[in-house]
Image 1 (cartoon, rainbow, N blue to C red):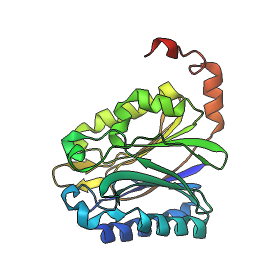
Image 2 (cartoon, helix red, strand yellow; image 1 turned 30 degrees about the horizontal axis):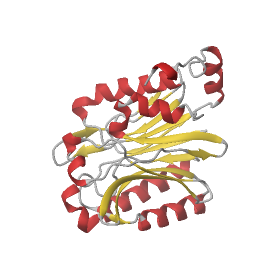
Image 3 (tube, rainbow, N blue to C red; image 1 turned 90 degrees about the vertical axis):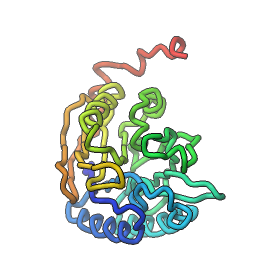
Length: 259
């Protein structure tokens, strides 16, 4: 499987500008002939959370429509990051994923809201799990702060997932923690981690990319710098079964003792 990571400078409060940039970079990614294109967190609005009444995507309709069309037209799966969505008067940080035929296969509202970036003041937390398949490969998708909760990713991955996708806006001041946490999530879940971060200056934080592809042993296969662009990596899904066969952590769990 070839994955292409789209890393760019999200412009706060400028959904049309961001949409144009995402489309430009996804078109660029097609030259690598990826199986999956992956986007960062809140790429449509950035953290202009106090403007969501005017700029959030109503029911996700615009995002779903054009992303589905792109996937179907180019026969490429999309783990399409997350967007700010308005539903029934509330706002959500919602991730969408699409199969290569354009079908929407996952919609996940961020479960863990990050107070340091005021998410808990403006957004509503999700209540559901995140599961989907790309071809015959089971996958899950979480958003940024979620990776600090290993019990959440373990719950998701323990249902058979081999791929853990992460979309984020993770500040440069904590980028070493980002790398360490993602390696830990890969090792403990014996899964590939594909994590996309943004770059650029936000309202209060600087972002420096360092998007990652990590194998089930925790080895970094790809780490980007702080530049805008498309970064691609080939992964061998057989490695998941090889690693899980040698150290059967899922079979050896004792969930009866964990509550």
